[in-house]
Each structure stands twice: as structure tokens, then as C-alpha cells.
Length: 177
Image (cartoon, rainbow, N blue to C red; front, top):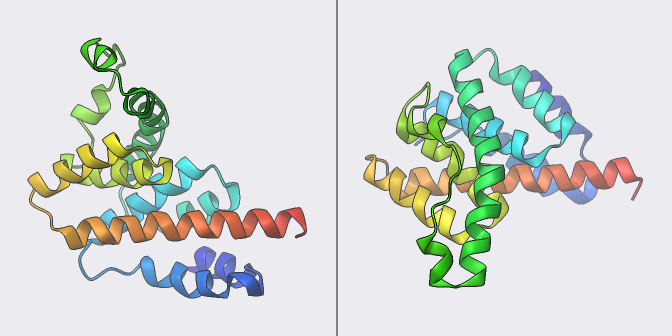
């Protein structure tokens, strides 16, 4: 994890906790390495922090097949759309919107290159980052139905949450604050 380590070491002192967490969350006793790296990639793509994305992508390359990277990109982009759409429906709270067809193409979600449950983990991370309650509930339920545990879910969210904190710390550093 050469690139991640270098990025981690560049975090300023106020982000000391994130330096420790950043390395720790990328080693899970419950998630397989392709799941960890796919979740981290999807989160980094979703967060749109170039240095974070580049470091994770560089280190992930030695641990995953290209199909994991592609699914992470698909999850991040689809969840960029879905979290806005479904959060709107949820926040407005009108049943009439729920009766209307979404008419949004999501074929990759139905047929990912990896596995359905792995794609759900990648999507769950992005849903949590966006704070979309209905997306979080749907993807968490799909992960559990797919045979994974609440520990898998928690590890997924720990990765996404830590990467969000790292992205904020990198932004603060870049802003000179």
C-alpha cells in the first residue's frame, strides 16, 4: 500500500486519527481483499478527491481484477444519480412520487461484472456517503439477503466514513487551513 501510505503520511496533525484509521480500515477480517478495494474505490470515485482516488487506484491495481475497478466506477456513477433521485422521493414524502416510474437506466446494477453482493457493498458505501436513507436501507437489505453479515456492512461503512474524513483533511490541507 505504497501510495495509500504516502497519502496517509501527508495528512496534517489535526487528522492524526484519520492517519491511523485509513490504514486500518483497508485490512478487514470479514471482507475479502477485492471487496475492500472495491468499496474503497467506489467511495473514492464518489467523493471526487483526486489524490485519494489516485492513491487507492494505484494500490488496488495489485490486488484486484479490472472488473472490480469497473464495478466500483459503475456503482459510484449510478449512486451519484440514484441518491439524488431517491433521496428526493424520500424527503418530499409524497406517495404520488413513489407511484411514478423512475425511468432511470440501471442495467449495470442488475448485471455487475463481479458479483451482485459485491456490487451491493460498493453501492452501499456510496449511499452512506450521500446520506440517502432509502438507498442505504435497500442496499443494506440486499447485502444481508445476499448472505453477508452486519459485520460486513459495518466494515463497508467504516471504509466509506474514513475515506470521507480523509477527503476532508486533504481538502483542508490544500486550502491551507
